[in-house]
Length: 365
Image 1 (cartoon, rainbow, N blue to C red):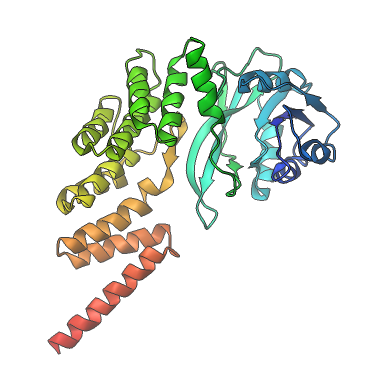
Image 2 (image 1 turned 90 degrees about the vertical axis):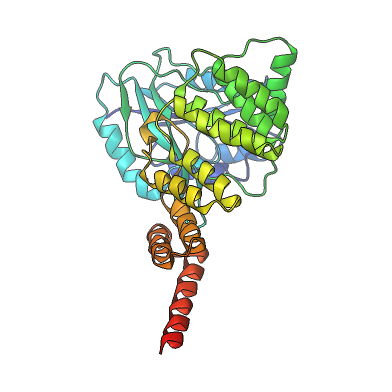
């Protein structure tokens, strides 16, 4: 059986760390916790689970901290976690089985990252990450922010998700944006990935014009990653919407098609654009395309699960009802209910169609 060192960097994580460490203790051969400057009970909590505790001074560089954590590992493989990540109990047995079966020539293992979940606990935002790498084999994180390990060697994909459980009480942090701005001010070079994530950070903080400029610069890079290029078009479109530039927004959504087949997320964006403007026939076309779109989960793309099922179905219900086709509308509402049977939108629509049929029956009797 292969052994795995779980490596976590922390700072002021007393709110979530015990949940993380409790979930991995039965699975880990070693737990390494690297503190970058906590002022709360973080390390006191960590000490209950491991004696492999280290300090690394924070210098606005996530890769440096994560690579230091890897350097302390002594097991066959290194696995990174964040303090607000967990391995759900129902995945524990599958994880242990995976450890038993890792081929000795494996370099890297990709696992799904469930970055968000709906109120019913179902994953709503999923993508694969390079989660486990062979120790002492030269695998290092790159990038000050949104750090990643370049993929190489023999790579396995395993469907054992890591769940990100972000505390709802935490306000959005300016930390990542400030790191990028400091890099820009210092004249540090930006790789395509840096530009992409810098643009996303600017957009998330409401700096829409700057975000558009940076994301367009990213799209001009000849070696940008396809999935990031597709999403960058969506990000620019969203910025244009915020600026009231409707036609430009639609143009950017269509531009994403030059990179690959339309994604469900983009089709839903286009459908919503037309539905908001009461062009229900056009909206219905694009929501139907979303239901047929390929879900490229293994590509590493950011996948919004609802865009391939519930959301286009519930929007198609609205569109066909507005177009005077209640039978088709009701059929799409039932399709939406097959994805989310407890959704208030589905249940309200179900009541609406039932009441409508009763009224029509009375009127014809």
